[in-house]
Image 1 (spheres, rainbow, N blue to C red):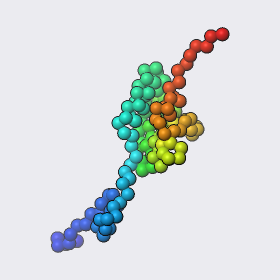
Image 2 (image 1 turned 135 degrees about the vertical axis):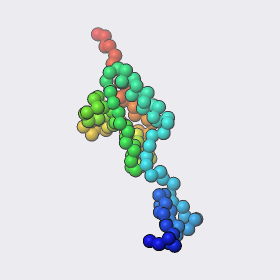
Image 3 (image 1 turned 90 degrees about the vertical axis):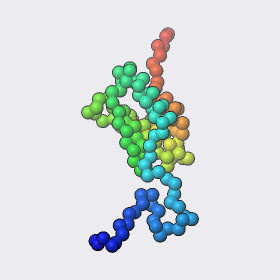
Image 4 (image 1 turned 180 degrees about the vertical axis):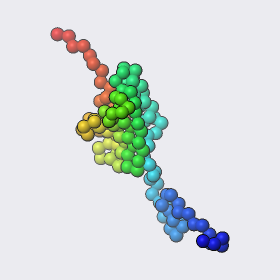
Length: 128
């Protein structure tokens, strides 16, 4: 490569220099993530469970298809629950789901608060 040749870079959003300006790339983010309101709801539940001594660690994964908040009883184990956000399923079954360690989907829906309610069950004393 000589000093006279220009260096060309490829843009990350998929629009090339040869593409007409009237046809922009789809307005889709490259990674799916939780927004601040969703994180507030999830971390509020997480804080209550940590205070109760049930949960001890968490991990967040952000990918192209979905965002995952994994909950661990101990850091060295597999996650006992995964809270997933998959925008592709938003119109069909709902973007949010809670998945158990076995892979069983405990709850799925469009409202994160209702989906997280499956994990926030409180025990009540039953009298006879």
